[in-house]
Image (cartoon, rainbow, N blue to C red; front, top):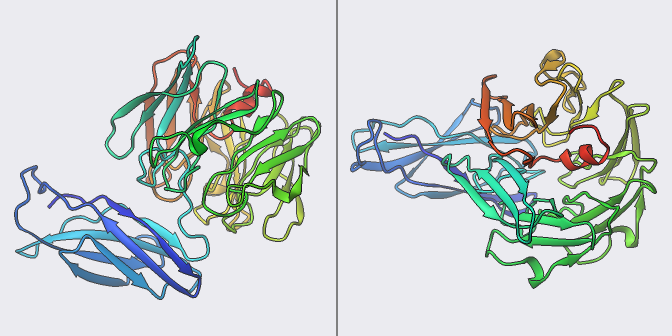
Length: 404
């Protein structure tokens, strides 16, 4: 039997009466690579702990099924298997985690829609329309090369059309324009560039209104003003700028309170203080986490749907990740993964729902991923001098002069 690749879609209703629809692609080859001719059906395995499944559902020959009653506010884990007419069962598919409180937030930098971050870079060539994206698709390993943008633009990918697939997007700071290529239909979002920003503003896109669609947003590093254009209604969040930061504090937006909404947040390198404006209650939370010379690298490293405070020490290539789930260090100690000229580039590259510590060697033009699911390393070369890694804070680091 072939190994199945499960692709799961969510149909949200109300929190107390949720219907979760799972769908997957049927296998075409058996375990020895021959055409599969005696496929009989599928089984869904479900549990509330990773890789521990207490429930099994035989769905026959259907390639989709709907589960209801998942209303206990806990994590749910699913895999699917196939079986043939002799009852021989395949290995399980990749595991999918879903939570009824924060249902299936789009995976960052997932350009092929398989809920796994893709390794991608943006290369600026001189001349018009010379912004070249190079994307290594995790679903099949194929490398796509796509032109979108030009040398003066900044890559700002996100899910701007709500199809759970990352869209190619660039920000042109000279005119404050956003050019968003929708993955759902291949068209420019809104039919025209979106005017939102100015030449000294830093792009800080995120889902600030909680509608599962990325919002265009910019941050003024001198004044500390945030300007968010809500995708849900086209209005300015808060009716005007929201002030948090200034004095060149790093913008570090993320979902720190785990409510499925991006929080406005900043990090001050002078005193290693994080200030987070919690979207759940509007409260400003101040936390000190970091050391002299560290740079922020926040992400959900423990898979609890909340952004963890994390810093990367270029001098030594060490990660200090404070888990939001327990308040303890990830792996119980600092993680050595990188070196002084490597840029932190975290993402969920193994598809287990947890962010992997990852660095991009700017001079080596190579990605180095420490996979959280098995502790193994993944090395991927890009091969283009001057390519920009598609990662949350790379442009911010360059603006502050922290990396080459």
